Image (cartoon, rainbow, N blue to C red):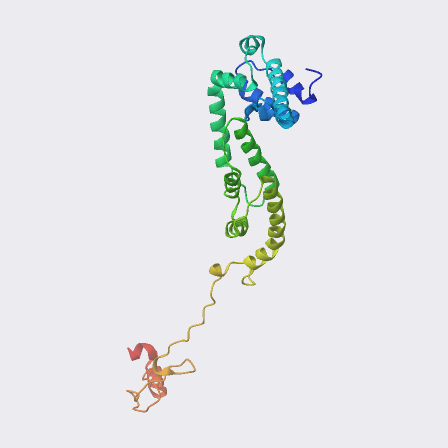
Length: 279
């Protein structure tokens, strides 16, 4: 196959043996697409009328030539046993239908794995939107190769649902304006939105961090306790309680019996302390 497309070397190196059907099918799709022969797998051969026009002849010849080349690529990339089983088939479509019947279980399992990966992949906040979307596009391409049919609008919707909250405004604009984008256009628009989001992020961060000047959060700051005023019987301001009424000893107002000078002098002469006597 050295005279074929240089990409065909991937088929030479990975010939179909059976267990590697999914990988072989992926490589075959790459080669047929690069050569422009893949259309014979999805389009029927044009019918020539009894008196065909030049356009009909050209379309017919183009299809037949492309189908012949596709058959050659398929046969040349098979193990000998599979070649013998398929060399008599008249179209590339029939060959692939036969192979799908033989190895379809692998195809189904690979399709389920790719679909699960597509549906569970979420973009982490702050990571590259380009890398994320390219990864999802790879899953979608693999699903297409494996036979899954997902329309372009659904593909875009699936990618949008995997984006983090920072792209919420982008999703709203897409839905409100009923945008219609290819995956390549979506990737470019998301990268532009990512640039704007990153520019707005520092300001939002500063606003979020603004708060009390203290290094401790407000809820952990202790309130200063106000000093309690001493409660003094009788309401004295100098801290000394002023008695109400008269002294029981000298009958004079302004002091208690134990503070009475006359009483203290009398007790002193008797050799008894004033506090003890007052009791």
